[in-house]
Length: 449
Image (tube, rainbow, N blue to C red):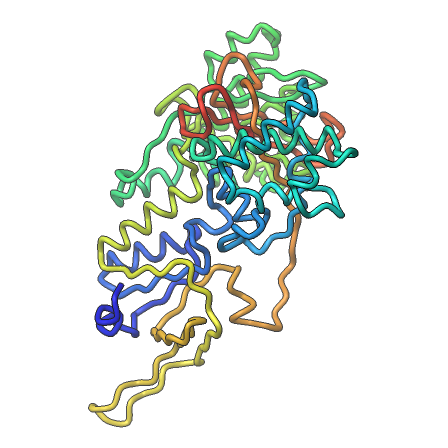
């Protein structure tokens, strides 16, 4: 944008949106389509905020592990040794690893700072480390692994917060009715697996799956089908007064389901995996969650879910941002702010010639001031808005794994649910596996998020 264009660019809007997360992007598209003037700002150089998706190099930049190459950032703190702790066992010699790393650096000198982040302290120079007599074989292998990933970096789409969409869920319906779906591509998830007693098995969700399952007895099949049929036909407010506030797990036990089948329904169909929720969710809410899953079965595939190509978080956000732009919305990415001012209410003009004082003022780090009548902001901008405000926090542990083959031989696009306590885990775990079919990785790899 040249100087003349900048001068012509308006500085007052009906609404300013801060952050390009999915919720903010939907609001921006809705306002623009309704004829409002929208300015959408993000301090990051990418869409999606904490739901963004990156290639390998972009991921390291996003989480602050790219040395001098860091751009933007998510405000998180990561340790390089922890990030690369899963580099795997090496079958090559240290000399082979050193030769491969040196060849990579010779062809990609700008990646020196990035590889340096993996070095154990006090080492800060990779060239010196490669010739150090005590160089760790594990570190050398991690460096070799990283060089190979960087070589194919653009073939990866790594979601910070992976999402699957229910095929008949409200978000899919919104994508259809709004027309935003034309900017996106999907593929149906192929299978859902559940961990149980040291093994994993396919979750029987449909009637066909239940009766084809040879590990479930005939009596159990009938009981399970009765529960699933009841959940599918359930309507809010109907009967079951004694169960409305009773825990869902107690309701399932009263239906004489075995612990294994209760886990199927509770953890891998209703997808209630948090320990406190498993014991406290009411039967009414549990039936809603089960019904939501069952209603989405068979719409576009055997499972209830759709997998978004190129990463759900960033692609969904970008699709709504694109619609906002089509209707006149203005976008500024990689734009840090210095101050946000909000008045309690808009002033009434003293005369018809005077204009009311804008309610919202947003100051960019470059000194530019934008004003608006309304402000919508993601929670990541709270420190700007309410410096003294503190919000309750909770920890979510995520792992991104790049695999040489699928976890399950029968499918490449799948989800694995691991109920609490199955492997000594205090909380439930969900692993979403992607493949080259959804542009998650090269053909010879899979990703688990």
